[in-house]
Length: 297
Ligand code: AMP
Image (cartoon, rainbow, N blue to C red; front, side, top):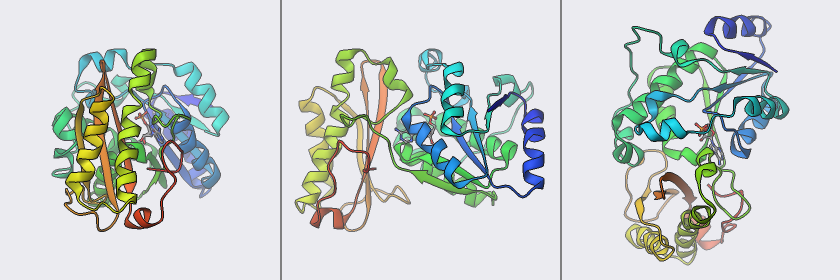
C-alpha cells in the first residue's frame, strides 16, 4: 500500500486504474482506525478493484477545539492496518492541501443537518463534514464510497448531498461494529478512562432496552424514547438527546409503524459518544438478535 499526500499524486496514482476501467472504492476516515473502519475497508476490498482510504482529521467539522486537539492521531499504525485490510492507497493530505490559502467554498445540506447532531454540535459540524466529503469525492472520483451506519445521520446527509449535486458515486452504508460488550467502536473510545469505559455501556444498554420494549409490542415513540432515557439515567449517564425518527428523512415519528431509527448521544466525562439502532415492526413480532452483538444498527 502506498501513501500519497497531495491531490496531484493521488490523481496520478489513480490515472492508470481509471483508464483500465477498474472500479474504485473510497473509505473516508479520520484515522485512529479500529474494526469499524477495517470492516469498511475489507468490504471495499471484496467488491472493488482499487481501494482508497483517506485519512484526514478535518478541522472544519470539530465544533470544540479540545476535541480536535486530543483526537487520536496514529498514522503509522493506521497505514499498517489499512494495508493489511486490503487498501491500495492511503490518501493522507495535510490541512493546507485540503484547505489552501484563500479557500472560500462550503457545501451545505439544509434541513437534515439541523436536527440531532446538527442541533447538538452547531451547523458548522455538518458544513465541515459535507464540504470535506464533497472535496474527497471530487479528488478521488470513486465509483463507490463506504460509510458506517454508526454515524446514521451522516449517511442520510451524504446520500442527500450526492443526489442533490448529481455526484456520480454510489453511497453504501455498512453495519455498526461493536466491542464484544456492545459498545459501538469509535476512535474516541480510546479517550475513556476505565471507569468511563464501563459507564459508556449505558448507550448500547439504553438502545437495547427500547428495542426489547418494541419487541414486546410497544409502538408509542415517546414510551420507547423514555425507556432509553430512564435506562441511561439509571446507569448514571444523562443523555444529550434520544430520538426516534424515520431512517430516511430523519423526521420524528410518533408511532412505530415502519422501520425507525433510534439514535442517541451522551457525554461520558469529556468524551461525547453517539449510537443508534434500527427498529423494525417485524423486529417486534420476531425478536431480533439483542445487543450486544454485531448485527444490529
Ligand atoms: P471516522 O474516522 O470516525 O470519521 O469514521 C470513518 C468512517 O467509519 C465513517 O463512515 C464512520 O461511520 C465509520 N465508522 C466509525 N465507527 C464505526 C463502527 N463502529 N462501525 C462501522 N463503521 C464505523
